[in-house]
Length: 128
Image (cartoon, rainbow, N blue to C red; front, side, top):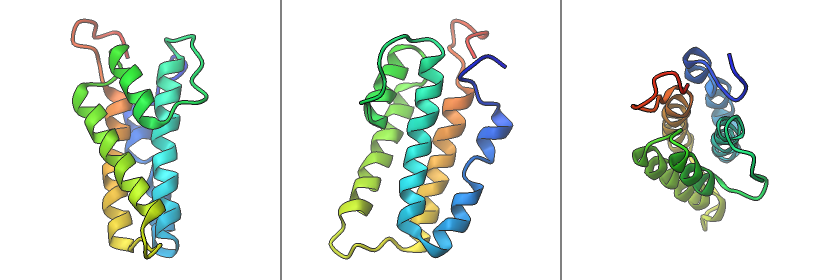
């Protein structure tokens, strides 16, 4: 498998450990889930792009990935939503994230990671 790629099987199980973490530390699970989205985008982009990605957050990376044909506009919107939810968790007045909320967030993270790992450009089925 070329550098930067993740198999669909790996993408499907990449957050399983975070569901366990969400039981004891829901906020930490949310933050780690967001980081995994950033990391997955960085890996996929780095395989086809030479620019500096170190200062980019997930939303910026998602837009670049869309421009490179790695993800769709729908995936960009999903990642934007993940960032909003992550920021709400980080800056909530109560400072608490409930286990159920973290579990729902991680389900979204898992879907986004699967999309990042498996998206094929319509005009080039070998682009994955």
